[in-house]
Every structure is written in C-alpha cells, then in structure tokens.
Length: 330
Image 1 (cartoon, rainbow, N blue to C red):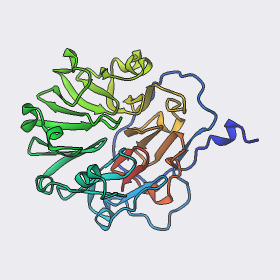
Image 2 (cartoon, rainbow, N blue to C red):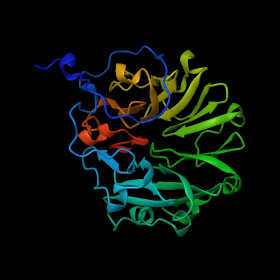
Image 3 (cartoon, rainbow, N blue to C red):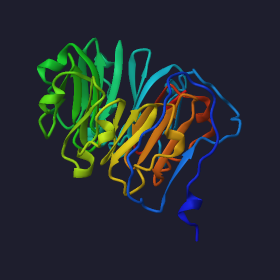
C-alpha cells in the first residue's frame, strides 16, 4: 500500500520570471485526506520553452483545447467553474472565450457569445459561475446567465471601477472595486461597512474577500465558519488574496498562508510556496502558486489532474488561474 509520504512530491525549478520575494507565515492545520499531495513542475529541460510569448498552458481532466488565439500574446486568463466548460482569455484588449459548449443549452449559448463591448480596450476579466465579467474604461460588462434581467448591474458599476472579481461558487456573484470601496452584484450577504472604504484588492468564489490598505483581510458571505474567521496571521501585512471553494489563500511576506476547509489538504502549503511567491489562485479543491523564479506549485486534491503539471509550464509565467483545471500564461 502506498502511504501518504509516498504520495507527497516536490521537484525542480523552472526558468526565471520577474518579481518580488520574502519569507513565510502560515496557519497550522488539521490532518488532511491521505489522497492529497503537492507538486511543482518537473525539473527536466522541456522540449519547447517560450517564456514571455503569452501562450496559455493548461492541464486537468477534460480541459477544452486552447484555441489558436491562445498560443501567443495573451495577457490574462480566468478559469471558469460552470461545469468546467468555459474559460476566458484577454489578448490585445479583446476577450475570447473557449470551452466544450453544448449549444442546445440556453446558458451555454449566452456564455459563448462575447458581446461587442468586450472586444476592444478591455483591461480585466473574471468568470462568475454561469456569467462572464469584463472591465473596459472603468465600466463593467457582464454576459451569460439565464436572462437579460439577471445581467442588470448597479449604477455605480458603470464607471470608475478599477478591479473586478467573480464568484465561482455556483451563485454568479460579482465584486467591483471603486474609489476604495466594494460594490457587490448578486450578493447574498451585504458588504460590511469596513469593506466600503480603504480597500485595495478583492476576490470571490462562494465567499467574498477584500484587502484593506493596512494589509488586513475582510471576508463575508455564506460559507463555513472556519473560512469566515480570518486568522491573526491575516490581520496585517497581506499583499494578495484568493478565494477558493470553502478556503482562502493569501500572500504575506512572500509566502502563502491559508485558512478554511482542509478536507483535501487545501491548507497544507508546501515548502516551495512558503517564500518568493508572486501570485496565487485558489481553486475548487486545489491551490496554485507562482514563484519569482517561475516555478509553478500546486497542492491538495488531484481528482481533476490539477497537479499533473506539463513540462512547458516550467518556462515561467506572467499569470495563473486554477478552478477545476489550472492554467498559466507564459
């Protein structure tokens, strides 16, 4: 019988990518499911390596093939959670969507049609369950869902917005950042007063996150109590946040800290993600981090193959996203 120690695995380093560094602080966690593990990209020299090309590399079970537009020049990606069918990319200010669409389904028909407004000068993208969200000239654009009525945005979201986040926990929620305050779309729980000013970053899935100027994390929504209780480590000094399915990731002093559900090892941050981390993405039952050296690290549950990192992902990345599948932009 293979024991849990044999299942845990860490391997070599990729090629360089730019950015910051630091040390780690993390939350101690209970024992996880023995079927979990962690991985970094394999240490062998890849046959083709194209850092800086803007090419999307993705992995995971039933991942829809990346279209030709995704092989160069991409600047951002967002992994969708709606039945693992669709993903978004941003290239030359234009949003493109791809996936395994069933066009007999009205929701998937609506999702597949990128509106004209999202094909020029877009600066940010986000997936939100059965919706897609884009940001252009400070105004939010949404499409998908079941009816036009459900696409109605708050008036405040039509100008001056600087950041967007989509909830992929089945609710189709959206968060928008404007003048340091959070605007919520389709939220089940009201935005707390402390998230209405002094906010510098937002994230969402089945719960909402906001990061204050002083590095303190605020959370709200309908999620398990362990996830909604922000630990002492995340009360100051946090620089980035990511909302997973029942758990939360944050970067502090260059290392990943985590809290919430640990049933699949989501909180068991491997050593490779405890320093020099520049980006994080909390997925459904797995987590992903990108280090300053270009190393991709994934950990927790590998049911959808999120830890089966392809060799080319070693090349160093500029953006990452993890849901039921994982992606990196080289």
